[in-house]
Image 1: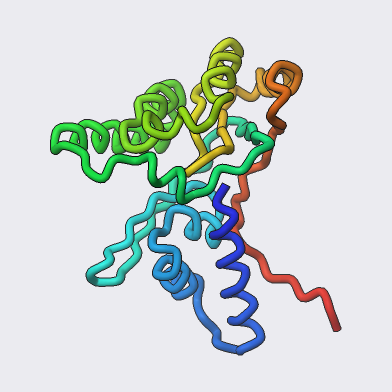
Image 2: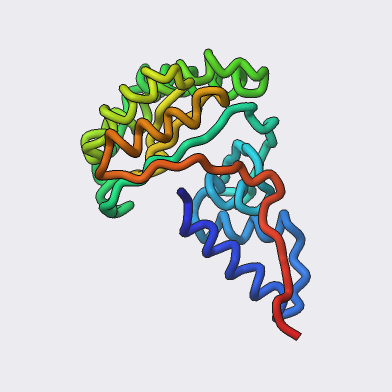
Amino acid sequence: LGSSASALVGAIYIANYFGDIQLSKHEVLQLATEIEGHPDNVAPTIYGGLIAGFYNDVSKETSVAHIDIPDVDVIVTIPTYELKTEASRRALPQKLTHSEAVKSSAISNTMICALAQHNYELAGKLMQQDGFHEPYRQHLIAEFDEVKTIASQHNAYATVISGAGPTILIFSRKENSGELVRSLNSQVVSCHSELVDINISGVKERIVYQ
């Protein structure tokens, strides 16, 4: 769930406060992205909500765009075991053909547009056609297919791998999410599933000492 990004942003905010550096949010984003190598997790950690981002490693510029918060419930299914990010990255191919890259980019671009238009049916359908990482990583998460099947039985919009895994994300219709969580916890005993809130405000500073 991008915990390394949360830790990194927290560390920068602590240094920013105690060092009286006075970095702006964008400057924090730029620094965190350079350290992390991409804005995928640090940007929403800083700003909250749903964000698409790109880091130009030549110009060292980070670009982000905000999308309205989807009107869906988000369920996380967390296996009891750890999946090292390095192992998950090794599962990815070193190269994609031009046609594979074009197809996967078209899927991703259309999915983002569907989210922006609140067309969750289409967005969910496209999420499950990812060609960049999920086909290569799903075998590393033994419960993935079972979780996906149960979610589909409850008419969920989509079931996807969260980043490098092993956490699984389910985008659920709000009226079905409670029963879906109960079904997952009773049927997939090697995982813990729960409904989570989407952070819409991003990182916050709070002084807890005098």
